[in-house]
Each structure stands twice: as structure tokens, then as C-alpha cells.
Image (cartoon, rainbow, N blue to C red; front, side):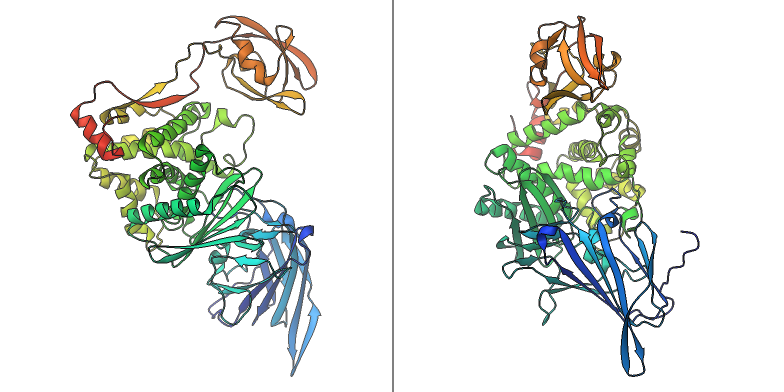
Length: 600
């Protein structure tokens, strides 16, 4: 902001300044963390404090400062041999920037409270059973002092509340943990409360599951399968790059997500989502995804994320690889680990391809643009999102699949995308050197030993359809759309019952419904004068044929409206990876080298 001067260290050591946070939660049911920052050895006349606006791994400006209240500052100055304490004047300079007058003050204390009632992997949550927080959403940083070592002391409200964090404890100081710098603090979530803890070793290193919430999880099965995933990923990269690892798992009535950290991850999942095979597989894929991130993005990361700017968006066009390639592996790794078989893997892959091919936005937004615009699109979905954008997770996964198949075909399975990951690890990840898009493409080309300029131009920077069959054919596979015989004509909208009303949630671009003037948020009332509910819509449409015109009645902004809609031919709603007839010996060999089977 114009006219604001921030104090920054200039040509002097920062070692004289010590920073210590205390996090208390004396009344957890009020959802307020009480945070105290103690600064000692301060020498400047002004202290600037800034709250991050986003957290690494979740590419959206979330304005964490909006939850801050009750800010206060006090300080001590040396007057002869006597220390004098007093309140310090301060002002708020911008949405996340506080400035304290510290003239003559060498020790100061900053107090504030953070409202925490949003249970996600990237925010804070506090109630009568636990307190969970992420560093970016709770702690200030001092500009210019991000490399300063920090300590954090936790004050639990009850003696039976336990503390879990990847940060190491400080010897001789109760409930106190050390972070070598602010980035490490941000990268180290805390779970404080009533929890289940399960310890296990993998490849000689300690691991923990810390679980909050009740559900139908089976710890022995969970740990056994997690061990398989850890071992499989460690084999790919040649070891584990940490001393210990922590899985934080929140079980809720509904929820799905994860956030990667260098030595830990936070997971959230439905409390009763572990019994059915489908839902259990989905959870293990989530585990595989977040664990794979400890290499891909936490250590092998784009140049734009090499040094985090917590003040604003950090733009990169490479999230297709950081997230999309990780999504490719989160299906493949549980298969390689023996958690499910080749047939199941292809079924899971078919579901992902179906999601991609039934998203109209793939024809609008190129993959590199999806990555660049993550900050304004992916996490800010609306009723038109599926028409106008494609997830870099999803299309990145598809492009990674094609690259893996291309490399395997050219090198008869003696090379694969695994070799790309290993080369990136050696060249960039071990020393945490950020890669540019050009360097990433160069590594992929060096492994493939073919010029991929055209591939990258077409599939990263345009909306050209991905030629799945071209890359599947050498393995004796092809993509099979479902038979639409018996399917209703295509209308082009999705509706859902909501509080006794049938609300249209999505209208596909160019569809008969959109051309007739039907919009999302319209209330669906009737077809040809007869009431219709959302769950009856497909059955009602089966009474008509493509080319028929029907009258669809809706409330549009509370105005009764009847639209004439001409129905189109049925659309395929799913795709399946299947074998072509009469596989050649070469196709059988490639299929066996990829999936370990000669037929499906």
C-alpha cells in the first residue's frame, strides 16, 4: 500500500530476535483459538505482522484474516535496570496487515483470537472434542523474518486432550514444538484433542495414524494397506525422504479431501465410508494421492512454488503435472500394491475417463489455462463451471495416462512415467529446486526419446480431444461407450429435489434445454402439463423420441414459464476400457508388461 513502510532486517543478524507462539483454547465450544506471539530482542521502531491469504496445496485466496478478532499488543522497554510494560499503539494497514509502534520496545506480546468452525483440511476447527489448525490460517509472519526459527506451545483445555503434529518437540518444555522457519510452521498441521493413535513402522521409519471422530474404520486393514502403498511409492523413488510421517484423519458425517505436507498429510472422509469396497478403494486412493505428494509438489515442485508468497496468488501452468500426474498415480499405486486387481484398476480408470468425456468444459478451457486459473475457477465452482472449465486434476490425469502409455509403447515397458518421476526427483526434488514448464517437458522427452512438442502443444494448450484409442491400441484396449439403446432422449439438464422443490442444478451448453431458455436454479414443475419430480425425469423422457417437442414448465425467477424443447438423440453417459478382438502377441506382451495380464 502506498505510503506504508515495513521494517525489514538490513545487514544484521536475526539471531537476536526470538519468536514464540502459544495456542490456547480455554473454552473450545466458543470456537475461538487464543493465540499469543512473544517477540524478544526486537530493535526496530515498527513491527509489521501479516496473515497469509492462502495455504500451499490449496490454490485459492481464502482471506484467513477474516476470522481474526480481539487484536492487542503490549511491550516492555528497558529503563535502566527496570523493565516497564505498557500497551502499544497499532493500526491495521490492509486486510491482512497489522503495524505496531515498537519505539523503545525490545520485548513485546501480541494477542488475538481466531474463530475456528470450518472443518476442512485447509482451515481451522475447534469444538468440545478437538482443535485442528493449519499454520497459514492461524499464525502471523513478520516480513523479512520468515527464515527465523519458531517455537509453538500448545495449552490444551483438558488433561485428556493429546497433541499430534509433525513438528519435533522441544526437550524440557512441555507441549512445545520447534519449526525451523515459517514455511515449516505452515507445513505442519496440529490436531489437539480426543483421538485414536496407531503407530507402525515401514522400512525402519515410524509412522502414525491419528484419527478424530467415530466410524466403521478397521485399523488393522487400514494400516496393512497403507504400509503397502508406502512401500510401493518408496520403491518407485528409492526410499523415504523423511524421519517420521503422520497421517491425520478426520471422520465426519460427510466429507472428502486431503492436503499434503512434507512429513504429514491431513485427510477427511465419511465416517461410515470404509465398509463397501468402492468407498474403501476411494479412501485408499486418497491416501496414495496425498502420500505421493510428499515427492510430487512438496519437493518436486514448479519454479513458481519454489518460494511461497503468502500475500497473493502464485501462478503456475504446471499444476496439471503436480496434481494431475499425482491423480494418475493414485489409481495405479493401490493396484501395484495389490489392494485391487487389474480388472478393478481398469474399471476405476474407466470412471475417470467417463468424468472427463462427460464434462463439456474440456472443449472450452485448455489444460495449462486450467492450472493458471486455479485461483479463480477450480475452487469457485458455480452452475456453469462444467460448461466452461476442466479440472487440471482430471485432464492432467488423462494426459499423464497417455504419456505413460506412449513411453511404455516406445520402450516395450522398459520405461514408463515412473522414469520421469525418478529423473525429476534426482534433478529437482532432492535439492528442492523448482522446475520450469520447459524443464519439465525436457525431462519427459528425454525419457520418451521422442520429440513431444506437438503432443504438449495440442494437449496442454488447446482443447483438442484426447485420442485415447490411439494410445490404448498397442495394449489391445479400446474405449467403449455404453450402449444407449433404451436410454431417454437427451434434454441436457440435471435436477435435484431440494426442500420440497425440484431445482435445476445444471444445464449443458448447447443442449435442447439451454436452447429453449431453461436456466440453472429454475424450479422444474411439469412436462406437457403433468407434474414431474427430479427422480422421475429420465423415466418420463422415455415416453418420447428424439426430435419430439415437449413443453417444459418451470418457475424462472418466480415467474411461471413454459418452454418448447425439441429432444435430441440419447447421449452415452459412461465409457469402459475393454479389450479389442484377437490380440496380437505384441499387444499381449505390452498388456502383460503394463498390467501383469494377457487378457481381460
